[in-house]
Image 1: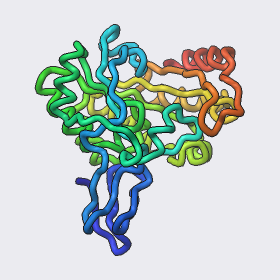
Image 2 (image 1 turned 180 degrees about the vertical axis):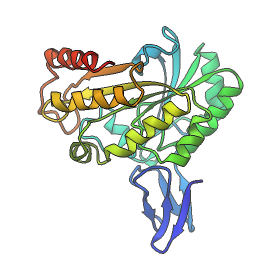
Image 3 (image 1 turned 90 degrees about the vertical axis):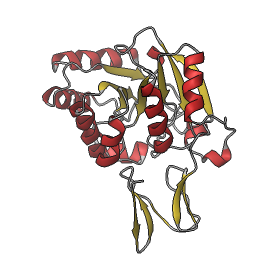
Image 4 (image 1 turned 45 degrees about the vertical axis):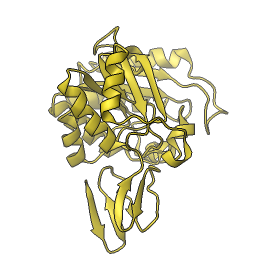
Length: 275
């Protein structure tokens, strides 16, 4: 699924990293490997985390408010954010984590048994466990369960359009509005995320956007204004935007928490730009 053979190896076409792998090599997201000349996912039916969460924790404040989401994640992520809260599972392979045996049908059973109205693909990056997300979402949708993504939005167009056919809502982490910052902070690029946001909107997926304000990294108020203006100009005026407070973690433990005044100023800017 979404791969091509090249003279240098097999290329994975799911996300913009487009890793080209030779026999035995592991992808940047830590869960795709070439075995006997075929590209396999190591993340299927083996989540390292499975919990019942309030919807607002994702955060979704305008999609099934007050309900509970059955939340799953496998190890691995296609970004390498310096500020990742879940780095102990996002930056390793499923071969390195303690996992549950939860194939798609079992996830749906557990969701129903725990009185959850949705399944959330979250904690790490659902694009990295794409096949597991996609096939679970198909089964869940047949029972009336909603499917929601907490995602970095780093995905190519064709797999995204296929995924949008089975999901209902997405909260996208827009990490910065400066491409240089994106590369240094996450290892990814800005434009593919903006492109993905437009596709989600085009395909009628409920969207909420999260912008984490990291001191000295993503707290430039001019860039925040540029981001809000882009959102306003591109049809996102009615899309909820969450400005989140950074707490020192992973490789940015030397930084302070985001000042509350910065969050308040960002919210004022968003209102001024029509969000």
